[in-house]
Length: 101
Length: 197
Image 1 (cartoon, helix red, strand yellow):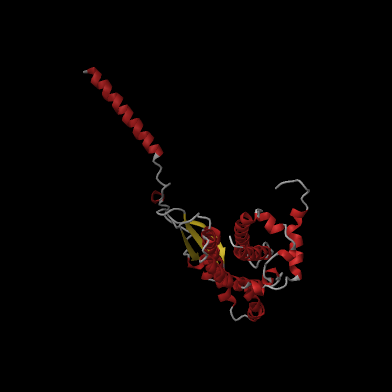
Image 2 (cartoon, each protein chain N blue to C red):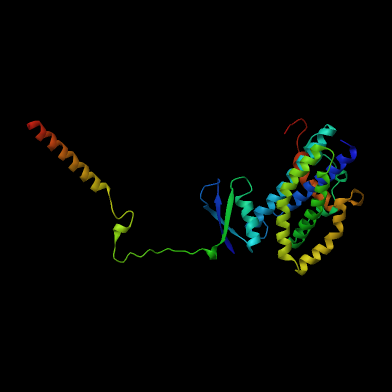
């Protein structure tokens, strides 16, 4: 059986995937994971999870191409640039009109 | 330190050194990668324990840990025959490992009661590492329990474990110790006179 091992480096930090061990059962997985990921003071906690217990998701359907739902689907950079330019020209226009008075 | 205490420490150190060498013979060929790492690490720990024990005795005797480990003749070693055996069967190796850890736990408890605080302190330190070895031995024991090959190995080796706990019962060395000694001390014996490590 393959077990995925998650390791916490310091208390309060999130557990992060460290690697995997092959073991006959939970007991072996416990001992092997300690050996490989915990015996040298490198971890404060381990999570050992049978790979079969991991729910996997690989596909993220976006049939209607609603890219504005995605973090990269709504580029702000250009819009910000335009907004800044607009703001700058409004300001200089304001300064000009103020000068006329 | 009393001569008798020194001899007891030497017995244990020799057991740990020789067993460490024997166990390390599985490095690279253990049944699976994870076990290879775990068992090699145990072998290395045993040799580390031997070194710490040799250092205590060496200081009393005005010599060094290396000299005690490698400069004696095979018949001067005090190890028990059970650790000398070159076991080629994994089941037998695990049987010995299990039986050894069982006896070693009793032995370390005795040392922890020692009036010599240095001896007691070292025993506690070693015991903390041995706890991991015992966990490893127990897991294999549980797994192989009832397997005929493993049961036969336990039956065959168990009578030899009494020597681990009693100097009087250590008896004669096996011929396998001589072969191991040749290999173990080869590099040190090849050192030209005058060179220093």
